[in-house]
Length: 127
Image (cartoon, rainbow, N blue to C red; front, side, top):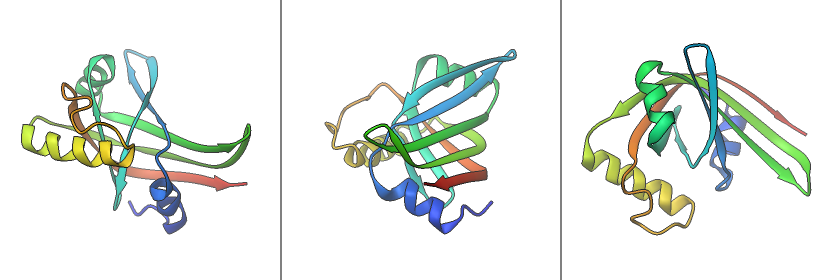
C-alpha cells in the first residue's frame, strides 16, 4: 500500500505520540507509543500487553493526531500488519532512531522489542 504523500509528510513532521490499537479475543487494547515512520513502514519498540497481543494477532492500527490548544489540526490513521523482530542489533538500531526522534536518552526503553508495521491502508484529514 502506498501512503499518500501528504499523510507521509504529516507522520514525519514532528515527534507526536501515537496510539497503537491491538485486539485479542474480541477485546481491544489501545496504548500510547513512540513511533518512526519511513516509506510505508512504522517502527515501534514495545513490551508487555501490546507485544503479547501482537504475537497473538498481528493486525494493528496506529492513530496520530496533531492538536493546537485543544483544536485538531490533522489526523492520520494507519491499519497494518505487525511483525515482531527478535534480532537485537536491528532492535538497537530502531531504538536509537526512535529515541533520536523524541530526543530521549540513547538507552531509553532498552528492554523493549522491535515491531515493524507494514501499512495496509491510510486515512488522513487536515483541518
